[in-house]
Amino acid sequence: MGRSPIRAGQLNQYIGRILRTDPILSDVSVIGEISNLKFHSSGHVYFSLKDERARVNCFLPARVLPQITCPMEEGMEIVASGYISVYERGGHYSLNVSAVEMSGIGQLAIQFEQLKKKLSAEGLFDPENKKPLPAFPRKVAIVTSPTGAAVQDMLKIIQARNRVVSVLICPVLVQGPAAPADIASAIDELNAKHPDVDVIITGRGGGSAEELWAFNEEVVARSIFASVIPVVSAVGHETDVTISDFAADVRAETPTAAAQMAVPDTAALRQELDGRLREMIRDLKQQLKIRQHRISALDPRVFAAGLEARMNYEQMHLNQLAEQMVSDMRFRIAEGRGRTDQLLDIVETASPYRILDRGYAMVTGKGGRVIRSVDDLNAGDHVRIRTAGGSALAEIMETTKEEKA
Image 1 (cartoon, rainbow, N blue to C red):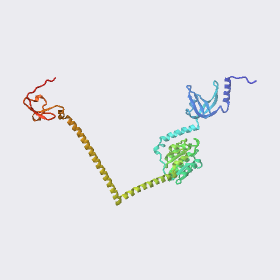
Image 2: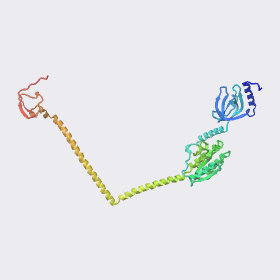
Image 3: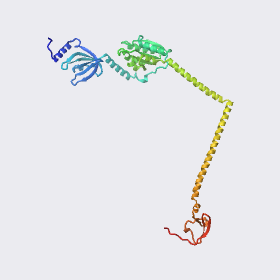
Image 4: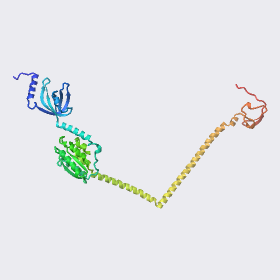
């Protein structure tokens, strides 16, 4: 028969003793990204360390926290050291942390940001300090490893694009402790001893952050900034960004992109020049035709023929104007006659003689003065009475006023 059953608490205690005595789990260091970071009111710190596959719960006692000099932030990658313990009540294990330090990548990221901030404050990254690349360089220097794939890719691109430019390879270390000084020295030497170089390309192919770190060193950034010759930084892949990229006059996404932007494509230039030559020939032919036409116009015979044609045209134009003027005058005369007839009708309609035709008479006194009221007449006055058919003389015998109704 098997062993007697034990309680859950006893099992967790037993597992705890096993973990504390294990030579590995009793003193283990775990690297990971901080997640679910919580600073408890008790002073303890709870968090998890995670990677792409798993997560480990961590416990940092309040008594240990003052000894931790490394800043702890969400998402930061650290190395946490301590021992594995079991929480008996919950039955889950955690890393009881006794020390924390930055991981290699995290420390490099801090150094990167610190140097970037320092050099930026000094103006090494200012746009006004950037030098333009020459449009037609004659000599390009490449500062990189002579055995890497990057230099072969750049040479291939340059030779395919431009058969005129010459290339100077400056072999340097691009990885390791001696690489930064080697790269900086090569850039300084090119400026001092090779004034015929038009462009410097410095960089390397892709790699880890540690492998690319030589291009994040201050000595390299200062040599690039001090270079009189324009510098193209071409480090790693498109997503890799280094201090050299900020200090350089131009940043290329890759070494092959640097080769493309450093030298012009002579085949494309030839096509463009051929196109412009065709345009110039076409423009010259057009201008030649214009000049020939002007010269032909100076020939007396051509001039006479042109003058006669011009005179005929002007004569025809004058005839058209004359006809138009006559037509306009006739129209205005007819319009004036019609208007006169209308006014005449209005005048005749208002004439007193028209009133006489309706049976009325008009009485005038001496001098043809029109008698408008009986008050203007006296007995014995002689007046003329005008009717529609004629007039008659009369003597006033008496006047009588009629009362108004």
